[in-house]
Length: 221
Image (tube, rainbow, N blue to C red; front, side, top):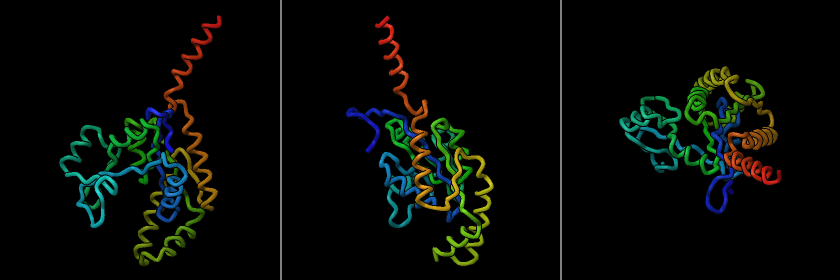
């Protein structure tokens, strides 16, 4: 259920929720739980210049665009963040995100610290809420990666090295949570999001409400 009235106008402005963590810290699970908790939270759909893979759907998995179109979007400030990875460009288009937050929906970003920094410095940065998830220990992080049974020892070693690079940027986030208990971390995430939705800048109707109060006060005097 979204925060809007019968005319579709938002009672609040949505948030750009950035959720980052090293691989194995529980980010994907918590992102799904947040979406189940509140369907006004939507996942950001990235744009990419790579070709669609089998089963991928345009607009659901990615927005597939040409390299020329991608570069034009970056030059015109229409990408909130972007990166060049393994020969292809990836980025978060501003238009769908702007539309979502204008209609009271929060947009959830699963990105690294570099993307988080770009979004905080973007035109929509004032509506950003960034949260970093830390594992309880490096030993536990490695155990979680190994328990997946998806990677060989060499791949796990690379993931561990990348994880430390991610962790080293923990202090660039608004909130940092140690995910030592999934349910407790989920509750803390919900508390943070609920409180941040009440920031003055997220409530565009407050100005008009105060004006109404002022008019009422003047009528009484």
